[in-house]
Length: 295
Image (cartoon, rainbow, N blue to C red; front, side, top):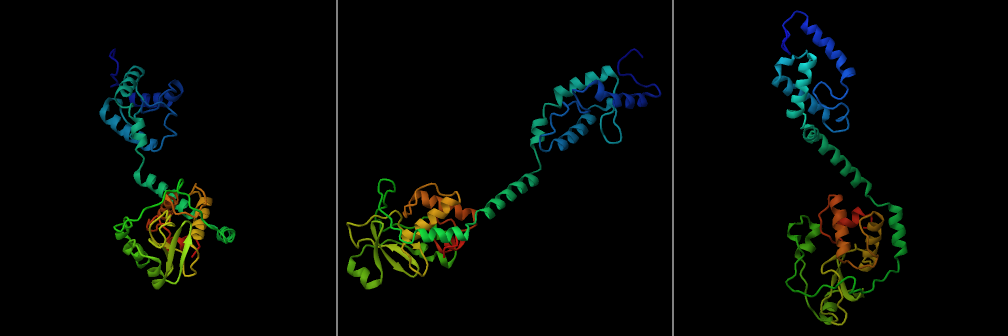
């Protein structure tokens, strides 16, 4: 009877339950698992972590006794203190890891919901689109080689990644390769050849293309590839400026509205295309103009 923890007398179970009922008032610094009270209420998954620890601790310490819920029942004062010290050393140093292990499905679901909400919010306002197009009715781009370095002619150039772009609307990108011709050749093949933003372009079936060789003194191109503008054949610099202004309002583009399809504009296009679930061409193509309400 003088040894601590010896509780074979009748009524010991009742004594333990009574003691458990008074523990919160006499020992506010810990809960039944030996963890500091209130410390994990703001941690995701803490409740689940505590339940797991309680079952583990009760299995490692059968002398303490458990009630019908599996929670550690009350213990005599001396044994309770020793057990609490033991729990602090062995089991209660893990709550941060366990609490952080929130259910993957729940966390992923919340992230997906946020991403979907962001994508839905990134739809341009049709009225703003029309207003921007009206403002740029007479827009003319100017060459800015210092800010937007020009590309150089390379007959082996192919648009990177275009071989993986599926769909007829991307065929012109897959098949594009620059060609060098004189003015006579371009005029014999295409009805429209125009000087736009420091370089000559020819128009063909909804797209503008660099007219390499048309005039060696006017070959400033920020991008070597097709630029989709639709069947109305609007000038490419105007369409680029429209796209830049809309992407700027939506938070994708932080550069100047200059009508040049430079690296910053292409990065903004790729980000917008990714959010809309489109093929990331980093170019102005038909699906992108449709999504922007500009086709």
